[in-house]
Length: 367
Image (tube, rainbow, N blue to C red; front, side, top):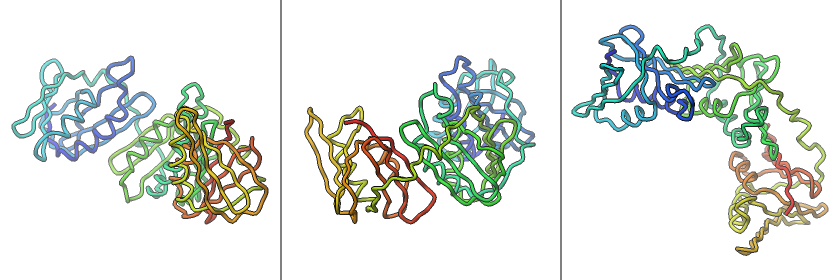
């Protein structure tokens, strides 16, 4: 194998590959990126952890066909730091990779490409063209409340529902829930929702993070497929039952008020300084014309802030994890939010005040 490739073109494939390659796997080759020539003008750059697979067909000048696998993270760092605009990669004896650019030369230990797991083919998958910015926005509004507990498989991903006209994403870790709906014309028509794992949805976001053109998405043989020009992602879906999220969202919280998003966000960021660094607990209290946010810590001290709000209902005070509110408020663009509370042991609900289809639910905590 011997090919020349533009540095930025190479980095485009390696950027995705090094994020997916699994350095903790018991199979050492899964920490590698697969490089394999495709004719005289393309090189396949692929990586997999057996659940998430990235494939990039990169433009290159192939002088000798063949394949090789090389440590993904090291290769990405090497290429990123090379001078000039062109990189030459050559396989030498014992499956070493020789990487050259200008007067810089690296020799890196590799492994035979024939030992690399077979990568899934996505060519026959039916995909649907959707707006990349909309997909990116929906991911941002739900990814932070996905469970990181690997023993709770059914909560360790984002639920995606689509009817070809609109789409919905929902996530929960048991302590909070995020739900967003957006028009997604031309999207896939799914009979039931699918569960996309956390790592997979993060890689989908990385693949389209600066993309303005539409991308293509679909479901094929138990996998979520993303195509963006010559880059493809294949994500193995979670086989689990997502909780009935509509039952989690309170419908009758009777203590509701509208408040400036930034005023509440800034107050929480200030008051959390005095909270416990294990629970991040704060008390949110509401009474006539006034919202109060406070925390106290026997080892540090106390903090309290008041915000004027147009509220005339009965007073209540509830403990919450402030970080959950901060992450939720950070993803809302609307200048004002509607906060809905009920009793001391009931969840709090936050929505954009403009009525857009986004809602966050935060469970209470005892302080």
